[in-house]
Image 1 (tube, one colour):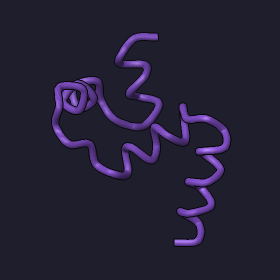
Image 2 (cartoon, rainbow, N blue to C red):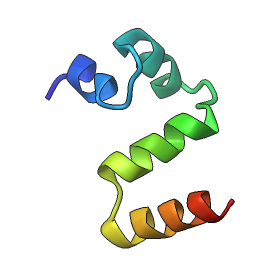
Image 3 (cartoon, one colour):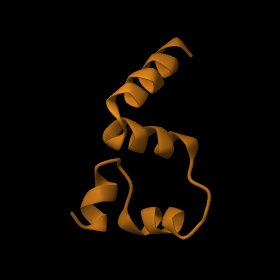
Image 4 (tube, helix red, strand yellow):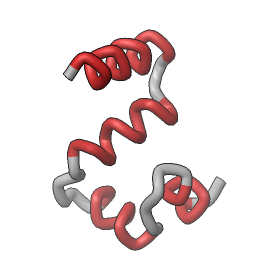
Length: 54
């Protein structure tokens, strides 16, 4: 998988993704999306439960 494929799966462009990779702050929502897409199942379940309960 290349960077364009990876970042497009969470709805952002490769250039925006590379900004985060170079040390800029990542918006919390992008972090959540990455966690849901690629995180360990138990972490994903906990995050989704937290997001649903606000």
